[in-house]
Image 1 (tube, rainbow, N blue to C red):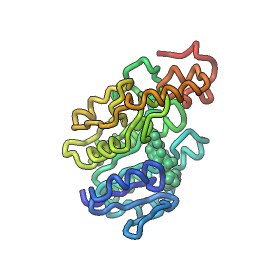
Image 2: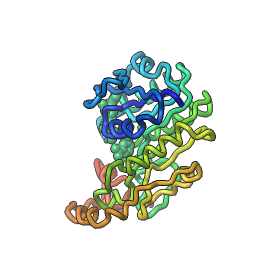
Image 3: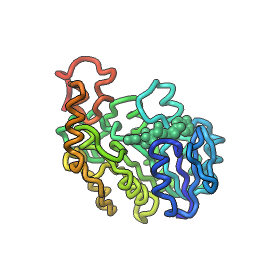
Image 4: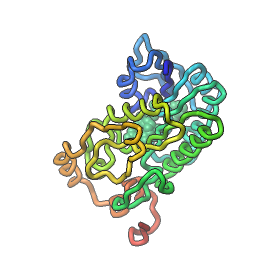
Length: 270
Ligand SMILES: NC(=O)c1ccc[n+]([C@@H]2O[C@H](COP(=O)([O-])OP(=O)(O)OC[C@H]3O[C@@H](n4cnc5c(N)ncnc54)[C@H](O)[C@@H]3O)[C@@H](O)[C@H]2O)c1
């Protein structure tokens, strides 16, 4: 793998990931709607709005691998999600096919399966239960990835990122935390492992309170280094300051589930 494009490179994850992948791949190309604040003179940046196919094709042209982080990264109005995450994701996969890219690592989200109660252990074979329009867009991206993998021969890895941060900061995040170095490890599996055709991994570190069965990632050699329990005291102290959220505290998706929820927790399925 010589040349890799990172979309959403100006965002929180993109900024961190590009420093972690520096030197790993000889040629890293960055793309986003806005220029990364700390762009160095020797870094290549190709601006592109994901909703514009011609711009996306320019960004994709000539790369072998793509880490697709670009998009609207929280819940938002339908028109926003539609442009950045639905049309944008389609443009990215289709441009990759047209220009002969071989691999895509797609930043999916835990919010594709947010409506599972925290007490349920969920694997990648369980049906999606998006908790938001944003979560629906991530389920769409996973489905699109399967189409392009099985129909067009791309090698596609979807990572359902939990919460990317240096440390887990509350109770929910003790279960879903993803350390930056562990994301880099999962991304490298997606870009390099010879046996990848289409996989979904959970983007979670070594979290004792985790809710997800991440066996597929472990089968590909993933060995997370971040240990959420190392931060348990500070996280639970911060949790004590949070207001109760009966719906959000029940489901894995947290506040994304409680937001716009009709009715009360009594009708919650398990
Ligand atoms: N941060 C997390 O914990 C987390 C959790 C789950 C999933 N994810 C996913 O990982 C990816 C990166 O997350 P992040 O935290 O860095 O988000 P972020 O919002 O910091 O970065 C997203 C980037 O995408 C760019 N972008 C948005 N719309 C665009 C468009 N139409 N065209 C081109 N660029 C566009 C933005 O300018 C931004 O720089 C996102 O896809 C997000 O949904 C993140």
